[in-house]
Image (cartoon, rainbow, N blue to C red; front, side, top):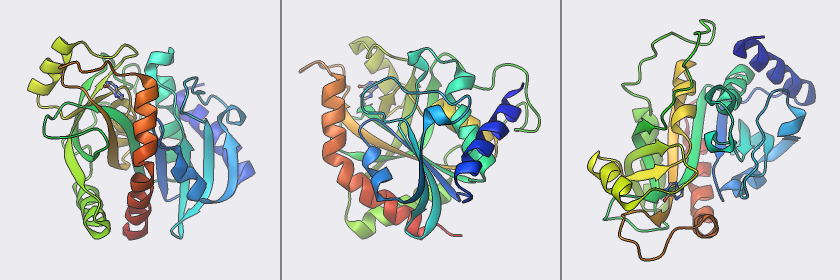
Length: 274
Ligand code: HPA
């Protein structure tokens, strides 16, 4: 069975539980799961109820798909994601994006926790992603192209939709939430970066480094979805080691900024053009 057929099978399993067609899909990153509680839900589906769906094994990732409405819009919200470093293949980690597309979502909001490389910034900042660097060492589209999912050589010249970036910036301004804008570099992890690696990534022009998102965005663009990316800067990854970064600290800072993140995403969803 190819990936497109598996995605259809998974989407049908979701549709048997809940009939709603989501307009917007949201993937919630480490420590950012609270937005899912704000959805007026028709159904909360554990990932292990969905065929072929990868299950996250790390703390801070619940593993539930919440389908319902947020700000009056139909949404499907993934509370937690599986990562490449957990041992899933690239095709497996982007499978949920293909299911969200098969469910009908045409806008994808991806979020993550990341280390800040930009020395002007601070832990606790929020960033909208303007572009990315794929330094995961892999691409989810490697292998036979399934033409029904998208083209062999998808364009990535505007991976992050400019209108959605502008909409996010307007929403932040409205709410008086400070919002950085920058470039996210995706690494495979799970080890954090060495100081030499961090200096290299900063010189490449990246503003934030994390272990997710880029492959999901590649799969989403392959399928023609419009993408908005939001990053929670949970630690400063400048290579000047004050204290080593830990997953506990990443989660703690993410939880601290989560209320701002939730307000911002709500406003973005509310102001999305139909
Ligand atoms: N590096 C990579 N991934 C991360 C970091 C980091 O410093 N913080 C949160 N996710």
